[in-house]
Amino acid sequence: MKRALLVSPTDQAQEAAERLRSRYDWVDLRDAEIVVALGGDGFMLQTLHGMLGRRRIVPVFGMNLGTVGFLMNDWREDDLNARIAKARSFGVSPLRMEAETIDGELVTSPAINEVSLLRETRQTAKLEVDVDGRTVIEELVCDGVLVATAAGSTAYNFSAQGPILPLDSPLLALTPISPFRPRRWRGAILPDSATIEFRVLDAVKRPVSAVADQQEVRDVARVRVMSDRQTRLTLMFDPEHALDDRIAMEQFAV
Image 1 (cartoon, helix red, strand yellow):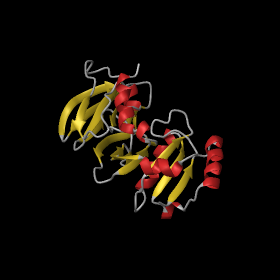
Image 2 (tube, rainbow, N blue to C red):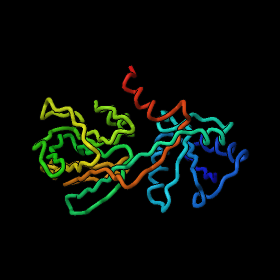
Image 3 (cartoon, rainbow, N blue to C red):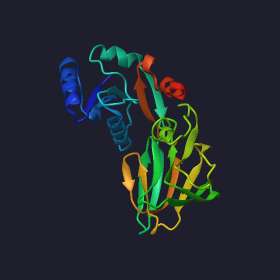
């Protein structure tokens, strides 16, 4: 199988890449049937976003040379061919964010982990929340709110006290960030067929930014979020390091 090597700019990843280049054959990304990514979770997200712009999306086998490495396998330079041959593959669909700013600019961006709305100033955000065209919360007063995929449910979503979703579940997590009103609302679990829309109330006085993974759009007025179920990204993991097991076990972490 033709492999391309993508490498984070960190010294550690670059040194590891030199060792792999001396031991294995590599092709240009345009000719690859699989990508090996060296870096951390941030670099993996960057790599996956790059896949979304390609005519042909290929699987990614990541090795951790960053900090947490939740989306990565352990770094080892030995037996790479055998590891890839035995790897388990997992498909994930990204979110699609459509954001309209108070100036009328329209911005569309994919998100693999989550789309989050965050207050820009010391004043809380005030948001109207609609699901499939129905207003479910007329005024959510909070620091922010996010929509997370199952793959991203253990990241920012979990830090905000959101639920962990099984990787193969057709679900999205809708999770508030430091909610003040409604005081007892702690979020919802929605089918991934849902379209979620946020309208920023008093957007000039209480400005809000929208962030799709690593892309930020400031001063938004409306944001629509939906799952792009026509697009599938494939991540590959060592059988003993599989993503579905790791996500499930996060529910028992103390």
